[in-house]
Length: 303
Image 1 (cartoon, rainbow, N blue to C red):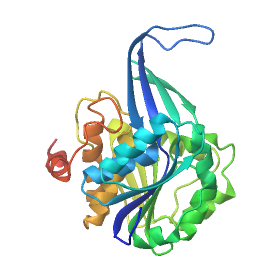
Image 2: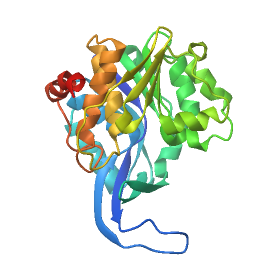
Image 3: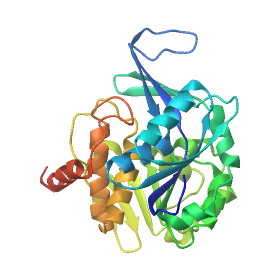
Image 4: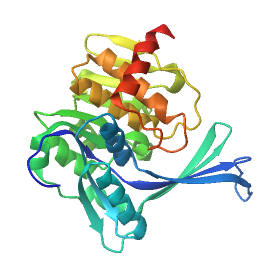
């Protein structure tokens, strides 16, 4: 990534190859199940958000690590061809991260081979990139990296979605709270929030974020701010695969915010963006443009 061109959204997050398996049943321990179909896609919480952001017309850039294997090099070229600015550190002899999803009638179990993603927490980055960005987005719980990023974002709009990384917390790390001090918007799903609450986490503007967004699947989103607590409805559509919906939501929210939308409307736009991703398998398929999302956004309150 060269030059000093403006960046709308600078993403710090992972890249991965996603494997999806449809099974007749999710087996118990020491049992087995037949796979009825298998699909492979590009994924990773950071890359997904960057790709959807680009599809919505944003100047998107991604800071990440990637394997130097064939899959990693192909992924790099794919992102470049989309016009995403890249600061990807290739890990020599490293394997690209893989996510494996086993799905059965709406139920799912997942397995993750971290590969080079483990190196993301050690990544060094140029603060000049942050200076060029209108918005910075951080995905998952790479706390060492995110503490450095958040410290450099005191005057930037910073969105943080720790995702399922919070399920690795046995107690809430001090670094997590330090990161939140500089975050403007924290995004969690309802399962993640329930897990954090078991460790005495409570939604409060004293933590740092001005806005907390809690996604709840087909029940819509709850938005908490100092001024209000509101429910934002979804765009109703047939869901084939919900994987990646949260990443598209984050991209949609950021895009709408940068267009000047108020929080409620930005979240509604984010829900409309996510509705496209759930309609097909894969986190980076069925990518919508701004105009496509805008059409669904206009219909939500009438559904």
